[in-house]
Length: 213
Length: 302
Image (cartoon, rainbow over all chains, first blue to last red):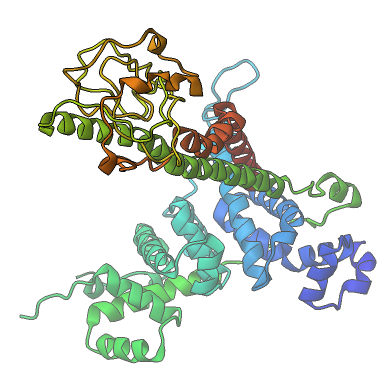
């Protein structure tokens, strides 16, 4: 539906779209959204580790972009938009931490605790599971989730989104030196976390006895 | 036995930068030279490379839906008027006005206060002069008039101009702050010599050098000192025992300025203080603070 309606602006350059959007052209603005929504959602998903929260953060980022478009002063539009996305993720994480939407111990309609609820399931891989790709991804996502926000965002932006240090510095609004040190710590923590999965990981992720010594 | 090399945080940062191709050519060559002879560095590089690849290979999460805005949403989220620039301009203007008020006040105080001080300093000098004169004068006590016919009686101004000293008679020095008008002088800056000891003399522009032993009681016409002496007061002329002609016209002290002049110069400061009261300053400060806070709030919410 949107594709047909946006056809006239579909082949415009990014700068043309931005100029039109600044003049109030909603089609041009929505074309920009379509170009970047997958990237935005992917980054939000890995930062939030929750599809619903990631969707909320992405929608907030789009609305925020619509309101702040006139503050865009050139440079990389992608970096500018990712900065809005990461800020939206921060806000969403703060909102979730203030008002946890999942009860700690689920109750039935009579107020009694439910014993074997799905929430009690351990998300970490069980020893019986094979070290398939899916399990590696689960392990990585688990370790990613346990990182502090500031380390997680840098790691997601560099290793998952593929941004360079300068762009990340612009997105998180910190010096490049901070990006380097956060990335270094993030990888150390990830490596340490993944080692905890031991035999579950494929051999390439495991340290040999020689390497451990 | 070779000691195990430990990697510092700086080493790990360099390793990460090497892995992410974020080193310049010189740094890269230097690091590669070190990497070639460091097993711990090689080990870490292997680990981090695997981690980086694994993170890159995580499946991309496509957006579950379109996040485009409908025309209704666009209307609802349309950015409102930018209030923070307006608020910040108002706050800035108030701060500037406040700065102008304070600097103007400082300016007026700086240039009007010394005037008021100068008004008093000649008096002090004159008093000193008078005391010294009375102490050192060995001559018989003779009062002379600097300007015969130009004298007057009464008048005040002891505090503002000269002070009668060494007087053991009933003469009146007038009231502080009053200005003797009986003295007729060619220029306002000149005060001249003495009067009979018993006379009610104005301190305005007169100087008692010493009291005279032969002084006669003051004629009744001289009492009380008149603030508005007229030429008729010349009737005291016979009382003058002598006239030091050689000192006629001698300048014994000068005023840098008359009080009226100083007062007229201090006038702008008074007018300024009347116009710009404390309420205005407080008002300006309140406006600056209020609009500054509003600008900050709107800036952070934009």
